[in-house]
Image (cartoon, rainbow, N blue to C red):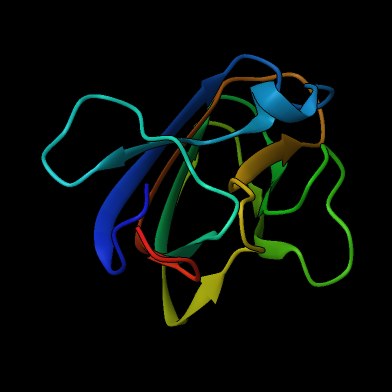
Length: 128
């Protein structure tokens, strides 16, 4: 993306996010006012400030960052246990900074529709 401080939002939707590979676990990111997905550079850091989760079935939903499809220590952005047909919105008091070059991702405890929307910005540790 390469523009320090650029606002963005992310969208994710899946009928079963429990066993997706890394690429399909990613939350697609869009620049402010854009409908075209962005590409992150190796030095781009996504900073998440809010997350909204909606589910069809009762699920545990984990929003995380990292280089693979398994949340590890320090990668969790949000973990929420939801009731069927549940919705939850979280505003993070301090932005979660994802690891440089990694995408925020979603993993669920089982099958069932899950939709995640996030807002934040991207910073770059390398010149654009």
